[in-house]
Image (cartoon, rainbow, N blue to C red; front, side, top):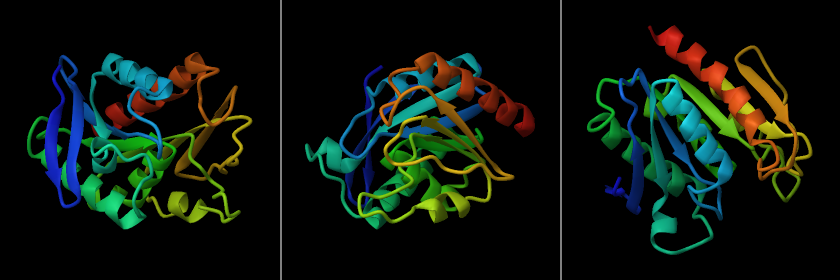
Length: 201
């Protein structure tokens, strides 16, 4: 399917839609800071979501569409994300409950903007818990008042988040790239997605 282009306050985002046959929810996924939507874990989760009757939009943030590798500041990323999710909910995902997420930087964006997008749950792939400076980003996870699934490589150099009452954390074999155990990623995400869909009625 030809990607769609959506204008945001910070440039054009590119949206790759993967509609389910009879969708019960929509999942919008963002990429890592220097990566793209072809990351193996994002591809795996897209397949799993479609099998769970969840339509998927893989999002390329405006800075990537413009050819830049380094992301802008968090408020810029978040504003673009909120804008494009609003447009998706007003268009191809109209009437569908929204689950947001992504890998690494994309997971952080989804967490920070969960309330603003009206998401019902958040999926975090390889959440970068500890910044290169050594600062913890635990608050970004703790501030999400929704069901959260974190799928993390057991040897991720950015740390392992702690589970909580609302947050499930599944460790799979491998590092931050989540490439070593894609079957494990699928096995973690599928039942969680099915629970979210069932909960939504």
